[in-house]
Image 1 (tube, helix red, strand yellow):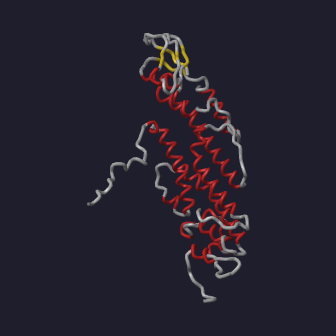
Image 2 (image 1 turned 120 degrees about the horizontal axis):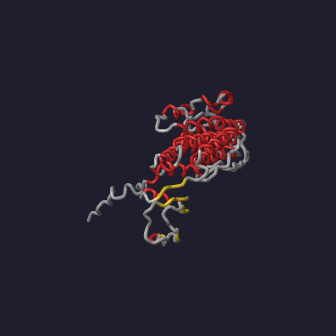
Image 3 (image 1 turned 180 degrees about the vertical axis):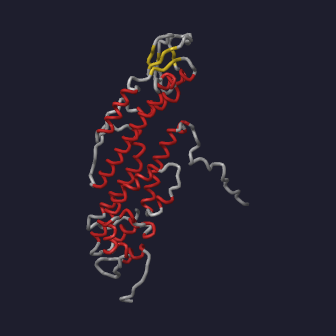
Length: 156
Length: 180
């Protein structure tokens, strides 16, 4: 029905969207609108992207599929937010060794958390080498489960 | 890597490592007691562990030289060329297995660690300014593999993400990809 406002999943909105026929128009979630964009440009490092997101970058990028006049500003905000938070993610992930990192990752969105993991891996691998553990041969995680599962017997 | 042979020496004056013939092959020596000889690091460590020799540290593994390097590293914005592309690895190996052959081993350990810390901090600073200014490419001279590997995975993934966010800025893309 024309003029109805509905909540639908992103994939459905993408499917229905057609810039020529204008079946639907998409309303931006508030964190991508101007008021919040101003907050991000003031200081993006303090924002809790996990609470607001948790897929702030991913979802924001997908939103750009719909012909919204604010798209250039949204795209710019996504990029600038990432850039300003980069330093903190790099420093914290590469310095926190063998610590509880839950506070450090609490306000990161999912993309940033994956990056944090990558930083931690670099650090952990280095520390492992430093301690002389790198020369010990260990079973690859790929084969550790071999022999633990057996194919079920075929019945009659 | 130079080793100084102790008095007991294998009977044959040339050692052949025939067990490794499939992978590598060659002759080393001659091994004479009381005379220095150049060998690959792996053999030096092995002989040392078997107490058949004394190791001679490389000439850069010296307090004065390393202090000089550390000062330069702290002073300059760019990376100091290191005396060996494997300075970290060699330091660790020699200090672990042959610290008795290395004068002032503890000081050396500290100096190398300080230099490493400074270099890694510089690397992160470079990475951050690279990202801030959205450069297309950068060149960093005189880094060693060890330093690159520590930050590498993080940096390449971050730049990959950033690149995708940058392509968002181009209008008129036929469709933004589904994966992120």
